[in-house]
Image 1: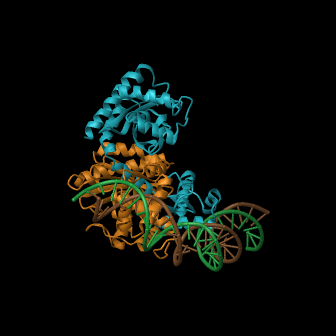
Image 2 (image 1 turned 90 degrees about the horizontal axis):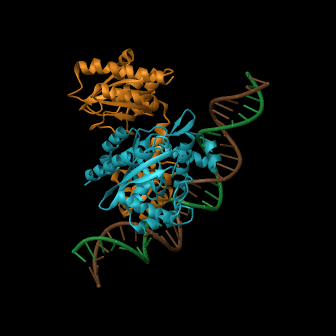
Image 3 (image 1 turned 135 degrees about the vertical axis):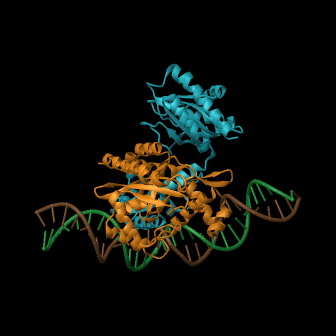
Length: 248
Length: 248
DNA sequence: TGCTTTCGTTCTCCCATACTAAACAAATGT
DNA sequence: ACATTTGTTTAGTATGGGAGAACGAAAGCA
């Protein structure tokens, strides 16, 4: 880490570039991939045949596609996450009681990864996706429960990228907002990640360390005023508290 | 395919061996991996640092772990599967109406991959896992909707591995059972995959091709007699029919 | 049908690179 | 403080991955 953009094992890098390209294109042929990635056909072919042998790619009707091996690994790692287990039923109840979308996220490096969701409609972020911590309610809730030093480290290492007009991009503003979040254990997001979505979140803290966050989100026109500020906020923070107890 | 067991790009193979080992051990250190895989420490280190750079592995508190990148790819590929979309609500209703575990599987090479499930308890197979087609109700339902030639090809290429005492391992027996499955569009599994689990399944056929199967499974002591043979079977086959219509 | 084009696979050769081995650094426990 | 274990880094060589072209096969078209 911190090196140039050249990695230690290039063959692995190209293999995963091929995997990601296959994912983006939802299946593809050898020549198409070779052109897109600027690698020779034979190289692409070597990687594809290897990935087939390993069971991560299959050759269906002329085009190469990803198999569900990734689903197995992805599900398996999630299944082993204690936060996920502790939160599942609470997330379901939260979705039921609020009538909105309820999410569970966990921190991973600079991002909050969406581990679980109930009530998805056309939500802009999918399960498995990650969003920058400072750019959403759940992420801010997590940051607020970290030490001042770790927040500073986050800011200096990754910066505060802008997602929408409302994203917090000023370190001082962020710090002051994190303070008020800490007071109530509730974070709000009014279109900071996606202009059309609002969000309330509360952190899941174990031993002083935020291991995740619960959030409820909805379209801006449905989620506002008292409903957002009080009713939903109360449900979200008590759900987070319940999950914390479950994790002890 | 059909080569020796040596693949074209060995670096990719070792990278994925490392990924799988990390998955099995739920995180691990460099030396531990090097010993287990019989590769030098520095090689393991190279691969791990590469996988970290690519975002598939993270270094958490001294041990290396898989990230949720796999969840993203796995969920994404599933989300794009039309069968999954068409089946979701039916699977939920099936689980509700039968009070048992309802599954959706899709064929992938020699296996039936579990794409979705509602009502899991201590089910022996996880979402994302694959089981041999001939060794479970859902897989047999799929095989029964394929041509005689394709079934023969399946048998000769992959063989009929035994899973339990009750697994069908004789080609002639399999063919005759597939015939009777085809008559009613219903397949049974009485402990052929796991002695303690019984199963009913019906194929999802589009344009004469089985694109998946619906199944309901339960512990042997709950699932038997009339309940298994008639009540559940009817619900399963009508769910499959509904999904087929959805897919047109 | 026969021609053209395009794609996937195979082949060969050469240089880059991925690996081994050993030394180094850092952390843990006694 | 020492010993032990682990992660990281550094050379250096042999291997094997990749470019490119040739081959084979399938598809589109007249």
